[in-house]
Image 1 (cartoon, rainbow, N blue to C red):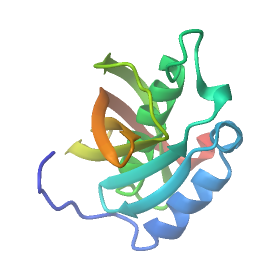
Image 2 (image 1 turned 180 degrees about the vertical axis):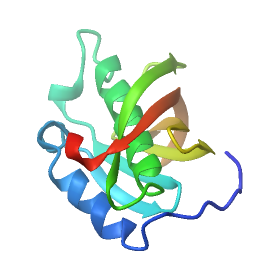
Image 3 (image 1 turned 30 degrees about the vertical axis):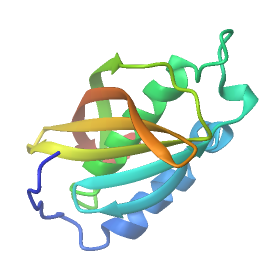
Image 4 (image 1 turned 30 degrees about the horizontal axis):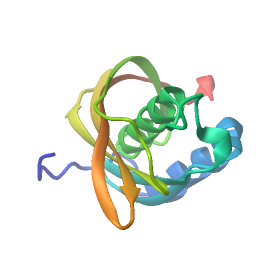
Length: 150
């Protein structure tokens, strides 16, 4: 990921992103945690539980994809104006290895901060015995829309 610094349009973006995160009931049900947020970047974690596994005892692809998508949305959401939100238009994910471990960590960063479309990249790592391995990588395109959609 790059070292580009992005400017948020809302100086109160931290509390707004936290509020949106807290209101995402499905995200809470799965167990994702917001670890850090800064302008154009977000890190989330998930303690892996049996309910996150598929039939071969790997973390389900849907868990990885949801984490990549929602974390990318938080990164993008940190850059929009107070009266705007982001909604996913499209995402593509590459599942690079079976996710077997104790924790998932997702790091997302905005690559293109447009007025109507923001593009973010997410990397999902599986942590096993203290070692991180890249399990999935996603590109997420998000529409910038008025907050009346919220």
